[in-house]
Image (cartoon, rainbow, N blue to C red; front, side):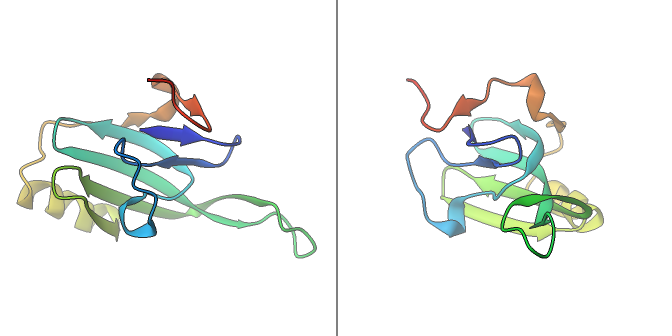
Length: 113
């Protein structure tokens, strides 16, 4: 599920409430797609807003791609676009198309079931 705790803190957390780093796709997730087995995502890296600030903003020069296997609770990535495309073919995930996260409902903090 998508979890949004601020404008820039949008991440993917498996619905079964795993919270450990190895199964979370970190912020800022900007594009996503999924089916019954996989979640795929495009994510921007984060950087400090300024040297004096602890507030982080997206760094659009750092683009990562991720694959989350929800059946086996495995995360793959971060990948470059080229490596991501190869992994999609390897896992036979050729029918999913990344779309902006704003096309989907985003839950604030905790999702409602």
